[in-house]
Image (cartoon, rainbow, N blue to C red):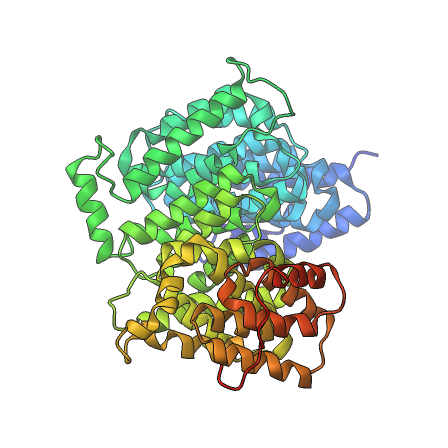
Length: 585
């Protein structure tokens, strides 16, 4: 038996045609109840007739209020049908698509709203219309009405969320759609395209580079307008940073026609020029005067160009750790350095704390070049506002996080500690660094102080970066009593005492031989453990001058008959006999 045609009650029709939105919603709630009942009874033909009735009598109507009522009604039907909405999706969405072309602002807005509600209800089923929806988002994203542009952005965000849940859609077709839009000059469209490329590249199941070299290469045509470039820098960086390195197998030679290598070279070029433009570098010859004025205005106005957005992109990539290649890390760190070096702007406190944390973590990197540049950036941030008055405080801000890092991660101290400290001594005031290390270490436990002092002492005695400090300690008697160099021994000695052998070697270095002898005599009153014996062994290897003979006899008495004992005894047998511990020493 043929089912009857759908007829809405006159009350529903009147409410849907009413100009008041609340009255339309009242009618839609009743229509939603009707659709749920039909769905529960399995009356598919009646449901199709209901949708057709709403489209023909309301959406296709020339009256604005009727169109809006019909749009809200069909989205209510889709919500009511729940999972079964996919069976009627074609009839629903195509009627909505047509309304996005309407000349009336209210109709376009409600069409976007209805499409949003339908997509939110059916989720992944809407992806079969992704190309159409993408075109709608781009077209309405350039609308003159701000509320419609905002609505299109909300639709864009929802579609991206759905894609994350279900990345199995026609990627090549969609990327081709992006490629067609590359030549569009509209700024909002360019920004949207960049955001989608960045978004697709962030999905773990999608290898954007493997789809087509042409799509990536032609994407950079967007960079033709420098004003757009400044605004879209965060999106551009998110795209090019992963392209800065080309993963290849060992002994694999680059093919000159290899698109991945070409994209890598192109990404490097884009990265360098973008950095020059953003930081207002003089080496960028093509920057127009208007661009320079725009960049200079960033000191006063943060709104035209938010540097924080660039930092967020950089940190998100750097935070991936081992998943990010050394080449990309180097590029990111260079970006951060240039930002702090050229742009005198205040960075958000929360963002800067995150930056500090990630920079400290990056010190564990296996690449020496990454660690060196990371330290350079770290120092630049600490000393960015240094005026000489707060120098000691700046050194404390630099050293305290490092000491905390070494304390929490002894492996980092063992593997990277000496390398990091030596580099800091090379780049900064080594004497002030050692004074700061000495003062801060007193806040920690005995065992940690001992291990840190041993490393600092070894660097002090052997490293070329500490040559000036060693000379100052050796010649301190000829210096002014109140000078910092003259007081250096006092600053270090109080902390060096936590490592017995380090304290003795400091006495040797500063020619305080009597104090060294007294310390060695006191060794008899303490428990000599394996750590102290190892330190003595290391110290013996470093001592070469005969002037230390007296103290070497004391060390010989403490050592068991090990290799170090025999080495030291043989050496002492080569010099004349004399009483090593005379009272008038």
